[in-house]
Amino acid sequence: MHLHIVSFNVPWPADYGGVIDVYYRIKTLAKAGYKIHLHCYTYGRDEALVLNEICEEVNYYPREVGLRHQFERRPYIVASRNSRQLIDRLKQDDFPILIEGLHGCFVLEQLADGDRKIIVRTHNVEHDYYLALARSEKSLWKKVFFLVESRKLKHYEQIITRASGILAISESDAAHFRKIGCHNVSVLPPSHCHDKITSFIGKGEYILYQGNLSVAENVRAVVFMAQNLIPNTKYPFIIAGRDPSDELQQMLKQFGNVTLVANPSEERMHELLANAQVNVLVTDQPTGVKLKLINALYEGRFCLVNSTMVSGTHLKEACVVEDNPQRMLDSLNQLMITEFTENELLRRKEILNKVDTEYDFRNILI
Image (cartoon, rainbow, N blue to C red; front, side, top):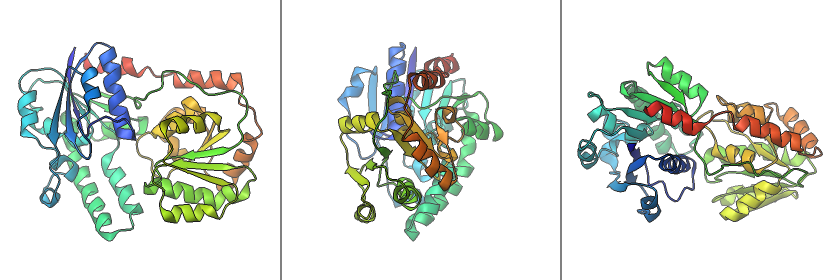
């Protein structure tokens, strides 16, 4: 019941997608009886004492950022996480290893030739994710970096075929990893803080979009709504998220039915989710599973999404899915006058309870 976990960053505070997934998986496994030996690369985060409360031990390693790693054959996200101290520690026993993301697969390079059980939890098809970043980036230098990194990641990805198993975040990602030759591929949806649905029945009075507003993907989603939804409905919109740019703030000021909530506290975000009538969530990047959608499904009423938002998941069954802007607007206006009933709540519980993630994860480590 001992398990090494290699994390790409310090998973506390659990305040963005990747580290939320890591932190709550650690909590789930510790509760299930695993003794976690956690290894974290530090990257813009301090050591976290709270991790000592749920782990057998916590070790930290500096991420070696710098230009020299950009000229290596390995992808930058891997080359900058190549601690020999970590490898030496892992060699001191034969406990299974869980690597969080392709980022930590230097470990797989060094230790995959023996009988050691090494599982890789994939958070994305990384080369697709970086290609999407390149397409949305305005800075030429950053665009080139993302394109080069995408090519390196696509080549390097073959390393995970040497793993004992893969825990993919979605069905579509799992299909990709099987196609490139990985074996023992399972789907493990994101770990999160919710253990029950708290959605209110009845009706709310506003439409909510929530996300990190400093991320280009989310900014494009807000622009889409500003062009197609906000000016064409009488209902109030709330746009909530971290660090909106001055440009985004100025764009939203032109609409009389929009309230921008910048950098909401955790308590305020829960309140906004609980009291909204409709959560609108759209994306143009079919990568990973969006934790903001999971939060909306567990805490909010209706969720109106595009098909890319639920690509490769079963979550579409709990949402209203539209891709055509006019059909999305029509659905939005209809949902604003529709009561969220007890039957709707029960149906959502059935859908979200379909996958027992703790069972899936424990099973693959046997």
